[in-house]
Amino acid sequence: MEGHIFGSLLRYASLVRQVSICQEARRSLRAKWGAKALGPLSHGLPLCAPHPASSPSPEGQDARRPRSRNPSTWSVEDVVWFVKDADPQALGPHVELFRKHEIDGNALLLLKSEMIMKYLGLKLGPALKLCYHIDKLKQAKF
Image 1 (cartoon, rainbow, N blue to C red):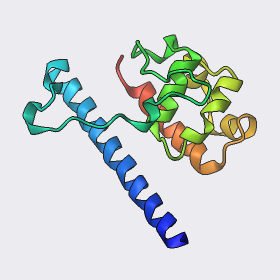
Image 2 (cartoon, rainbow, N blue to C red; image 1 turned 120 degrees about the horizontal axis):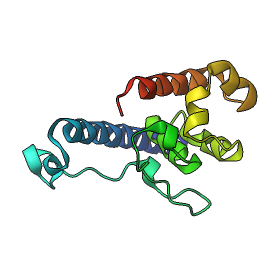
Image 3 (cartoon, one colour; image 1 turned 135 degrees about the vertical axis):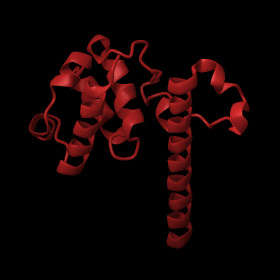
């Protein structure tokens, strides 16, 4: 029984990784060619399955992509979406902390690893991963 459950978990992890790679490819195409490049079968790419991070949260609130690319304008829910999308496996389980502590876009940009570990209670690994994604966000031109 344990082998069956473990095999199912491995297949699920593989599916999540494939969907993440597909989503990243779509973002790259959108950035390079614009939204028209994302037709159902454009350039021979199949449609992607919905990203697990875009599913509704347990409270029934819809996690949605931020309307603005500028993180300083993001709401708490926009930050929740960003965190889930950045790394669903490592950071997804911690998104409720961002709601609890009311971390909006401006607060997200101010976070440092020490603060994340001390006040949000994340372990070093997830804290460093989050800092990496925040740094990438700061470097992006919006």
